[in-house]
Amino acid sequence: MPLSDSTPVDSFSSFDLHPETRNALDAMGISVPTLIQAQTIPALLQGCDVVGQAWTGSGKTLAFGVPLVERCDAAGRDVQALVLAPTRELAIQVGGVLGALATARHLKLLLLYGGRSLAPERQALVRGAHIVVGTPGRILDHLRQGSLVLKRLRFFVLDEGDAMLDQGFAPDVERILAYTPPQRQTALFSATVPPWVMGMAARHLRNPVVFRAHAEIEAAPDIHHIVYQMEISAKLDALRILLDNRDRGATLVFGRTKHGVAKLALRLASLGYPVAALQGNLSQNARERVMADFRSGRLPILLATNVAARGLDIEEVGQVINYELPESAQLFTHRVGRTGRMGRKGSAITFVTPEDSRKWGQIERELGRSLPRTPWINRGLPQPIRAAGPSVPPRAPGRSPARAPGHAPARQRSGATR
Image 1 (cartoon, rainbow, N blue to C red):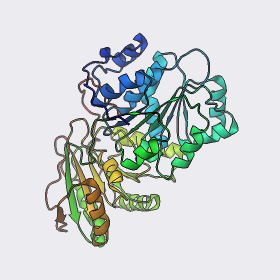
Image 2: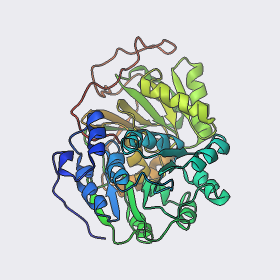
Image 3: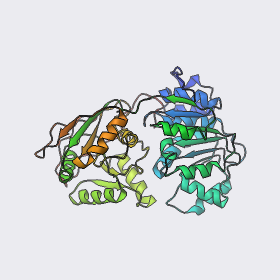
């Protein structure tokens, strides 16, 4: 797997694209490719298999999305491109980014994911689709029922590839690949690409070119890390103090299990905090409402599990709080990558109890760095927590915020959508 070190380009006009694709990018206000886009788009346009590693917010969706629509033909009704994502939210997010490009090229895009009836999706497939974005379980349902046919597939993408090739999803991915032609072009994109992922990728990609916009698995730029050492009994009060003193920008709190996250959300809500939980037991409509409220700023605090928040693109997450430790440095990287995006500053706060010491030590070894621990002081914040933007005065529990955080201000027109 050759590691490419290509020279970045400074404009999408440098790529050989159809006029309709250029016009769609212009309409989206995008003219300058990000590093991962500049690296991978030329190789994908040439038909190469690609592994692309870059942080969330660096524009990975357009990195594969632009070549994907370029290599599809609007003639006919066959599915020519398939994007697999580990969660419904990420599939919806990817579909939203690709939708404008597909429409410009007169391509039909279809989302397939669980939590809703199969029948409307089957009917849509009968009418024809050129591009399908979906989750593995629902894609397999349609393949087994014969409503989805991939015999003419040209372009296959594993988004959040480390999750897609992990033990939970790998069997389904293998089954889906068995329905695809061997001459397909394959791309894998992820924020982390540990060695085991490269080993798995070697089975499914043909001499892929590897691009790493951020090669090391380490803390992202513009993220201030704070690790608080505390007893288990102090965690809830510590979380409340942090939430009372949060600055502008949304707050994302991570727990380990869907039941634990749901229970913590109920506890905080009973204390008057404007919170909701994103976890697997929610209905699809409820999940979409939660995400819409969080993105708009109506919901300033979101509790989530690793899987539920995978790959989410929320521009103004001021801080991430690891209420419970993740299982690995890889998951830690994905969690903290929700903040400090696109040049904004962010905070990543991690709670470590005596029972967590061994696991935290393992995470630090995998990260290749040590993050100093600060003893938690119950009488208040040991040090100020500062995230992006001007500070907001502390709020008492139960009091609604004076105003919800707004959308990000207009920024330089780059292709960084995720």
